[in-house]
Image (cartoon, rainbow, N blue to C red):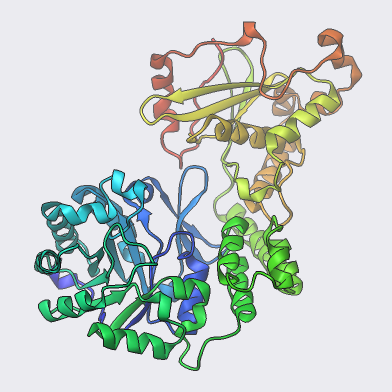
Length: 534
């Protein structure tokens, strides 16, 4: 591995520190625009990245690592590849290596968090809990250094005793790390406590690797302040956290910008890279920390979408143009995908004689307005048609406690090949598949769901070309149903969403669930497993 090792010089660098919720792609790119030399991601726990699936996001031009429910764990792009350091929370050497291997080709370096004082980190043996376990520190860092192609660093807090701190950093240096970032407060100290700059000076004298000073945000407002902080600590590199969170333009050599300009620049990146509105709102409010009396500040408190945030900040045209461009790109990608690799739809007869339709589609929560879901839309449609209520047969896989659901509407069953981390997500998947087959809008926001449109088009083509399929799934019968079907319900009542009659409810044994696992375990597969009720 030594011959293939990439290098990164950590000397003379001003760096965006790792910050939870703040250090996502929009803020990292903004910091680089303003002059930061390197940017650290927010801390990402090893388990999360291990369980995430890598996806080439052609629509955004990013590489995404996603959980089963499409939650973005880590999103990056080529613009930051040579400047981004992936910070990981871990307490285990082999697990940290497994996680780091998944992302090493997309980052400039990997950092191990050994300084976080938060309870959730400490209880998991991560963060500053590692400071009291030198053998574990040595094992984790040595394992990463010896097996990764990118540089490895770590970020620590100091111990109460200077000599103990120096002993620790000498051990860390012996593992072969490329740099060490030092937040010069102890595990129990907070920002109100003075940063122990003298500890950093002694550390810099003790080790030969670059030392990155951290913890001085209270007195930092400009590049000149950062320079002075470095001089006080006897180092050439500094890592900026809260001061950059409040005004990321602190990295500008020509001086910081107005808060309102920084907020708008950040919002633009958030829109371009489809940041969740809640996280965008949080970061904007952090930027406005001392200026919440601004008109925009008060209005930002009430926003519930990226579009509303853009409206508050006078970026309506930017938002509309970005969405227009994204819709066009999504359409072109859908056509390309349809030509090169047709959307996957499978259908077959189940043991009870019904037809099972399986579509390669997932429910992505952010694609829907707040309070709207496919299950709700399906329930409204069925209520309007006065049909028999939908029946969700949802099973749990013992191995990883993930769920899969098959939905029955009329004489047809609907599903997807995916297992999800919650029962609700699994049932939403089935509802999306059903609504696509029925040609009923599932409530998603305009400009989203390029794959859904492609699937709907393919399904319609299949129905047009196959008379037997049309008859088997009974689409036409369902679509033309009206009040007559209401006679099947006592007193004309329709049961609530997800409710089923007691006599329809079946217990799925562990053995039966395990029989279903093999067919559905591969998320990229389009195999169909018979999930008929027994």
